[in-house]
Length: 155
Image (cartoon, rainbow, N blue to C red; front, side, top):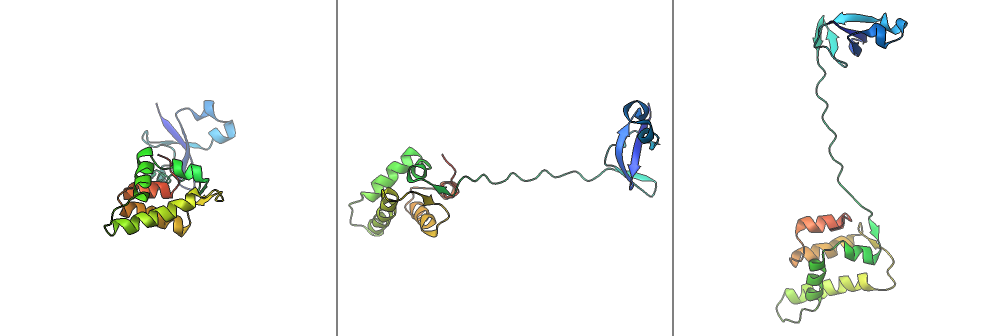
């Protein structure tokens, strides 16, 4: 069985084994016989057919959710054990530095999230990102989890 192609600008735009039965007669008349391996997209240069380079799949877009969330939605970005660790850090009563200072900073930051006047948490805000960094410093979050929460990705 022979292979036929309609060539436009040196490119096989249509390939068929029976163009007369698959295309309008005017278009079918444009087909010429080509080697069996020629497929749609192949190029004819200097009487030589070459396959097009493989198409690289587009990279998966980085998943990102809303950058503005309600305080409750913000808290739900954290796993229950992460929220518990934040609560424990806020209640730290020890005398050791820097744990005491870190606990105060976390408590101050989280109290803003708890403020009933707050209607939205802006994940793009530098203060929000700094607070998440504090949670990494306190080993409450891993850097990976911090990045996920910072992009608004739920658990």
